[in-house]
Length: 316
Image 1 (tube, rainbow, N blue to C red):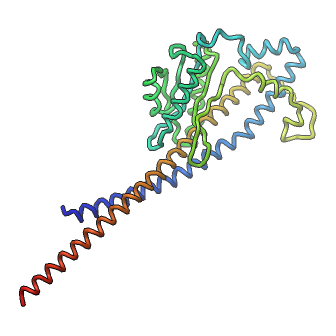
Image 2 (tube, rainbow, N blue to C red):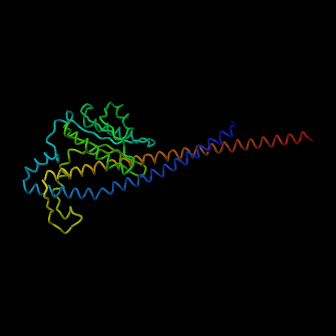
Image 3 (cartoon, one colour):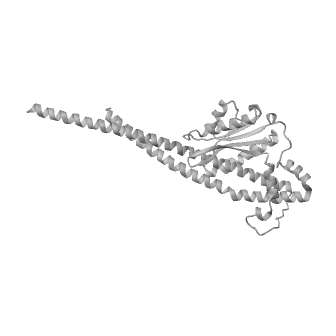
């Protein structure tokens, strides 16, 4: 194969790669948009759950008094009793990575951040139970000496997130019931801009005492976005502990769903950034190949013209 033919094949390959990269950029941008919309849509649902918690906490406080309310919070898991020192306490960690590649430093970034945060908390690996969401993050954690208790595939679409969240919630309940895990942290990348994401830590359990107090102390017109003029709290007939447990399950569902959505948006942002770099590199290589091809083709044409001229002169 001549050098010109080889260059032509390289140009064709580069053009095909360029088309693929452009398509991946479009898909990544669309995915970012839909995952952002999904996360945004949780706001009203989350507000409704907080309204429900406000009603039930207020009712408990009025019926039982502050002392018994505090005891109820411990029983229901709204707050935990004073735990043993953190280095000796069981802790659950859920780290969100990716299932697919071509997303730059996405997995390295969140794994480094999670490991650094766990070291700050002085939690030794043997006192950790770790769930990894996305297979591509496992090697980074294992290299650092952290054992993975269970791996979940990262959701590939919005329709898969709900079932994944429900499955993880079942395992969290098992953590609390069988392993007495009282602290659970989520680590995931969330979108910072269209092409940048940054790592984030969220404490799932125990719930923030200040947040609970804030919800309980809110006045109903400020809490309610549906009936802003109504100052009468809704009533409920089911047992308070059952209602709180149900509301908290929904609250945890929201937090996990948001973690999935933001992580997937961040993953696609990293992929978009990687594709932009790849597109630039391909364009540069394509320019280089095209220049070489044109030069060699011109050289070949010149050589052919010289041969024709020489042959003509010899014939006369």
